[in-house]
Image (cartoon, rainbow, N blue to C red; front, side, top):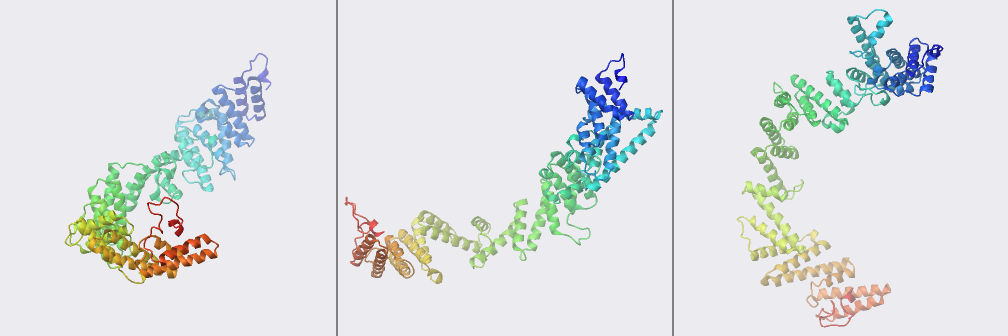
Length: 609
């Protein structure tokens, strides 16, 4: 320190830095900090690139000696700038970092590891940018021969590799997050930034993956990814979270797939090629040839024993996606699907249908696949017609297609006829007569022989269908919904019946209304009976029993209203009952004033409610 202020010597920032570096090299550490502090006091923090780098490395080395490794990491400059630092100081800091890592309890100190990796990769670089070989020569006093230098570099690299590998094993890091991988990648090209080091890995996933593939360690990379994401079939670019990592994975998968084809592992090879394609890899001619070879052999053995149809179908499906224009793969997949569909036709009908349907997707005009599906549909139609079908909904278009291919299929013709009968009856009962007539016209097409759909004849058929449906008997027709539906069916029949049929239909409708009124009288409230009456489906005086039920309902509701304190409502109900009991046929009073009435009449429709 006395020399720095000697008489006749000009003190500069550079001279102070040089003195501090010399003192550090001589291990005269108590002098280094005061020199750096004087530099900062007299000249400020260095801003020029070279002096700033030298200044930062010295402070980092001092922090490391003091055990403040977080500060040492913070001071470390970019690897590209280390060439401006004093190599002896860099070497001292690099040695200290390795010693720190070798101590117990520091196998997860990512910052120190990144610092050691960056510094040692710089010192042992093949081009020796920092003059590390010259430093060793100066310390030995004799030049270092080329062969000894290369041997020393290899030895030092191996020592660093062994230490980092041991630390990875102790911490449970895989090759993607491993410090050894980061070290090897850094030796190829500077990628480690000590200040960015974190627990997830010292280098990005993509860089680590590419490095492993370049080093011929693709299988190790795939094993690490499989441990992180066990389901190979679900691998995608989103799974890796890194496009570069996905590209490297795809390349490794393609390489492994080629190797597996050579080893006769057909199914595994196709799975690898498929995963590579999902990751964005485009199969080249060699991979396509390998995939085709695997497709020819997957699920098969040389002796024929142990053949697996399921494995073969799965493998051919993968090959079909990989080689969509290959006629052989499409034909083989179709044939295998049809064979398996036929084999489980009776034992597993749902699976058989899936096989035939998939075969038609691959080869739309395959006759055997279509024949298999048609056979299943015929069986379903027979069961549906005899009431034993328990499968999913049968689609009209499928049945029409079957009938088009096989005009003599009676089951299809009967099922379609029943289908359009149900549609016609349902539409008519809901008041949708145009839809009902359209359904009848379709029904007539499936008569054997087909009947020309004339409008008058179609209406006759519709009336017959409605009467047949309404005439059904049984326990299921003794409920209120069934009785109400019968009334709707007969009302619809009356609306479309020819004049010579209308009286007959009307008679059946009146009977149905009476049965419904009696059911409501016995099981429902008076208001329900009155509501039926107000639908104006039967006039007063047509059926005495119906009139009596309605009159009684009005009287019962009047008593209920009296008990509830509704005297006005009770009075109106009694008046309505009196008019019905008197057999007045003019219902204009019940349903509102006539068109020539210009004053309010409280005996109108509102009085009934």
